[in-house]
Length: 448
Image (cartoon, rainbow, N blue to C red; front, side, top):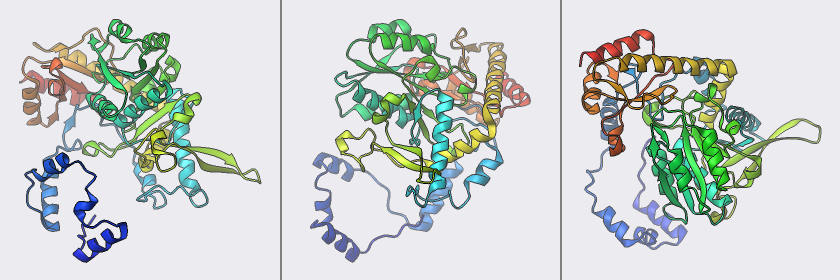
């Protein structure tokens, strides 16, 4: 996108149109301390378009492309294989627009695609209703907290598992920082939510519990027991999960959860150095009035022909701002379409095969690493899916740096995110990793 600056006359024209005397008048509602803090920023000089493009290329060159190195990175975004047909269909001009066309009379194809996406998410999560997607896993997690708070009224408590993705947790805290809800963490034991600590934290002031399954450390949570304890306390349960793991794990709906959210990136969306991604959101029919975002429904015209329409929009553009359940609203429609194509191509059997490959290869790597001298699994008795934490015989940052020189992305130093887990390294294995790559990775670790 090219940057086209405005002339002084154009700025004056815009200010006159909105009735502002100056640019300072336009921003007068921003607190003075915030403006002063911004004025004190030590920003570099402005760049020309050519200079900015060159700097952007240089910054991009510092990234490590998973296509050129062997990746064992996880932590919320995964290097899964994307069939070529996904991009081929996605890039058709009728889908590839800058914004989602919703006018029912001209966009039946788009609306039907969203309807199909919602239907697939419902099947995947075992829930009853799904929205048209959100921004990413973190934002839909925060939306789940807000929705549960709205449903439970005067209960201000939001409990999040200590094994929830730290980025998700920070987003939940940020969304609730200016409201009446209070976010508290539940400690973990053996890499999973501590059920005794959860039971003690639950009370009649708690609106919901948010857990992740598999959690950030890759451990499979006892969701059914978490649901039982939480429902006995009169609160709701939101489960944030990986859609690929649902190929082999019990779905949130089957486990009795009230809300299912998660990151849809593993479903046909490239890593793209961190985004854009999409978040899926599903829940019970009884909560449809509090569902954030948008919902597409199917109906019939006067001649009995199927038609698709936007059915619910609990957004601030359509209802009063204070009643909105979500203030982020741009539907990640193109990425939701990618997920729809991806799931359609895989089918139930294909998704299960991908999940089984991740499970088997992850456990193969864990077995190989735990056999190395000085290397240990962080939680050796904890069940895991495709991701697990290890305690190496040297600082994780040193392992990552040394392995990078050998063309391996050797996981995440968890201690950088949470000092409580200092010394632990998080590794992930997808279906893309071959036995040869895994064996070479273990051989390289052994040589450190």
